[in-house]
Image 1 (cartoon, helix red, strand yellow):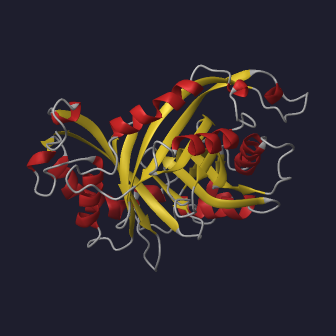
Image 2 (spheres, helix red, strand yellow):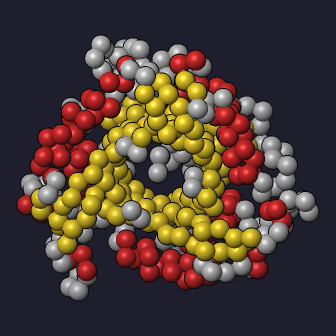
Length: 361
């Protein structure tokens, strides 16, 4: 099991992308509310105390972006695209006991870039479509067997490589005909989507786009705000997200630290599962089964003082994520990753193996 600590920080800044062609709107001076995110491992003595890694990483990132806040990015980063900003942050924040596995910059709600553990940049775009569907092969009485609808969201990630890297404009052009086909439609009526689960949708989109975009890294489909699936051409992964309102006290925090006092968070907990696709059902694991099987652990955590939980060494995010992954795998053997955030973007990831470290969600 590997533990990664995560943090995010926002900053307001102006920029112009001088390398773009004349007439492109981003060549003019403009501004964004940026969000920077880090994910990585730390040496044992990197934080002031065991369990203080998230707080330390949050402060480290906030200090790193401070020079960019309410500034013109061109004064600090030549050609300050999202990718160049992420690489600048990686160079600035890496080292001294911090080993970054992922650095990301989000410039709008619908666009950003991720730099993975191998240093590969993946530009991404988010799209929304409104569609109806039903799952024809579910057992009688299953709610998804009834015709219903969602405001789906789709994330496309593409590697940036070569002399002409993929940009948002290229992704928008490739997405446009698919949006025309899928938006305000019944997905069951589209060839290949007769059983339109999140997994089937992500695989179908992959097969439509990969021949046109060899740099495509993975496709992610949000069925709702709290669940969805991704596909990278080989593996299907799903996730289910929930919130916990819990009290905590960090046992190893020094007496002067507010983290030593009894306090609480609305934690965001996300379970990730990877399994072969069931060709009949069209899913890896039923989202309803994930919720039902995890419910006893959820009830042990929600609206509880977690420092009183038997077998939990401490209440920091890393300890909690590790405990959840260990407890839940007996009922959910496909579970191989748990994300736990105490505040947006700030927390820990517990995962088995290291293949998922680059996944953005």
